[in-house]
Length: 119
Image 1 (cartoon, rainbow, N blue to C red):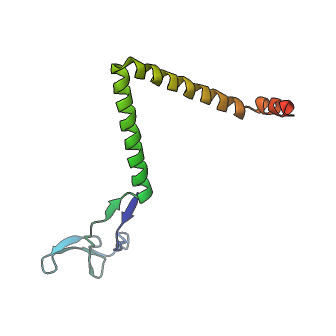
Image 2: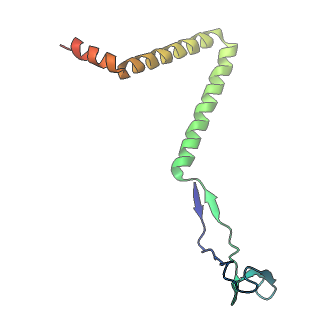
Image 3: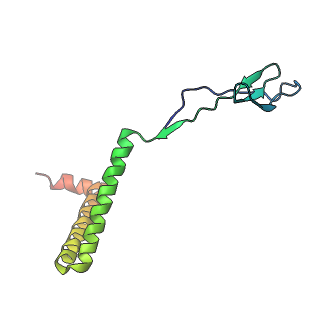
C-alpha cells in the first residue's frame, strides 16, 4: 500500500507548561484550522493524503480475480456437465499426488534414500 502526502505534520508539545498550548481555532481570514504552540498560532495542514496500491499489487489482484472467475466458471460447468465434473475430479487427484511427491522429496529420510539409489 502506498500513502502519499506531500506536506509535513506539526507537533505541539502539550507539556511545555505554557498557558493555552494545544488550543485550536478556526481562522476565518485564512479559512484554516490553527493550533496554539504557546507563542504562535500555527496553521494545521488540511491536505488529503492519496492512498493507493502499487502496480505489482494491482497486477496480483487482477490475476487473482481472473483465477477466481475461471474457477467459479469451471465449478459451475462441473455441476451441469458430468464430463467436466469427472475431469475436475481428475485434476484434483493429480494435484494431491503432486503434493504427496513434493512432501516425500522434502523428507530428510527420503533424500538419503534417493542418494543411495542414484547410479
